[in-house]
Image (cartoon, rainbow, N blue to C red; front, side):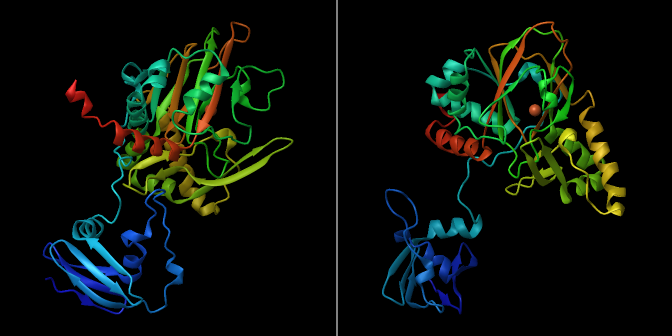
Length: 375
Ligand SMILES: [Fe+2]
């Protein structure tokens, strides 16, 4: 028998040579009987418990902590389960992974997948989603030239999430463009739509035709750039991860606004997770003028570093290819192309980053990587 001490709001139990403390409400809320066997959703309501939740009886051995609550309800907690929450305080999460930064030479080693293989093999989708989590970008090849098949590809990861312009967007020259993307002009490096409160997560850019002269794709891994900024200009990094600045998109029918941090930090592991960067959609920065004295040097240095050739991956996106990338992490743009030199048509869609992580968790648990060793 192990000695368990009952305190006012929780209990203490010796675990692996230490004294672990657990709150009574937390224990009652997470009694194994709180979960529905089929849906795995919580079916217990902690709000119905009294304000002074009490334990009538408690005992513990090497295997489990057994509690009888004030109303006679019995809970049994495996000690291995309690140890995990005491030590790690969370569920294991396959989707918390270290990002692999990449540089200008990434194109030749960028992960490539075939559309048909992805449709037929969920294990390949597991590998694809892993590359998207780790590197933020992957190329899907042999894509049929249709809107439906782009949606089919998106739905391997999640549901298509509309932006304020709808479920999909087409990029080609237009006569009366409402947006710079619909001209033949160069597009500066940007992430899409930071004026949206939840800026789009995973972007699918399906190239249907690219016969125009020019129009190269320009991609940069913002994680690489932000990590380099952190090493070389730590005070600038701090400013860009601290202050939020406004972005805005206006048309006759829209006035979309949101404030975002230029550099975003992953709360799970402290890594840089992405950025918000779009000069054409930046609103007037409304920070105090004295703060702007610090903000502009940081903002300009970061933007200039992104254009540095050592970070810039330049390549041509061909018809039948769909480049899929994390819209927060990968900054993208294009060089100008010559009007009338040939057709250039891309169609894009978005899926949430949460959908990517969810699909990865499910598929990687089902198709572990060790399968390669068995072949
Ligand atoms: Fe874009």
